[in-house]
Length: 138
View 1 (tube, rainbow, N blue to C red):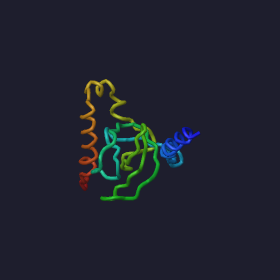
View 2: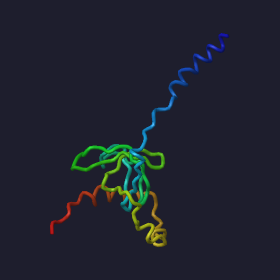
View 3: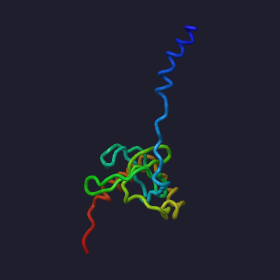
């Protein structure tokens, strides 16, 4: 009898500690598509925060919440894709699957043989430079 109590005493806290957290549900089953050539899923709603995943054009994401405007008036959405949760700028998402360079010219794109590192840097270039350059007035 004492061995059963000892086992119960030892494993009861472990069972309680591993109880699953309540899962967030997507907003009204909203799924959007990433619309830029390459980009990043960030840990926090800031381009200066750590990158969790490199995204490519046409990748589907589930939206969990819409963040408020942050620095420079950018809107961010909290999303999940392929098991990774993070933040993306709202301007990079659209409702319909975009017609991407990768799908338009697959032979040319595959011949580039981009490494994971090159994809990462193309995404950083897009997020940090191409989106921050002010457009000229005409």
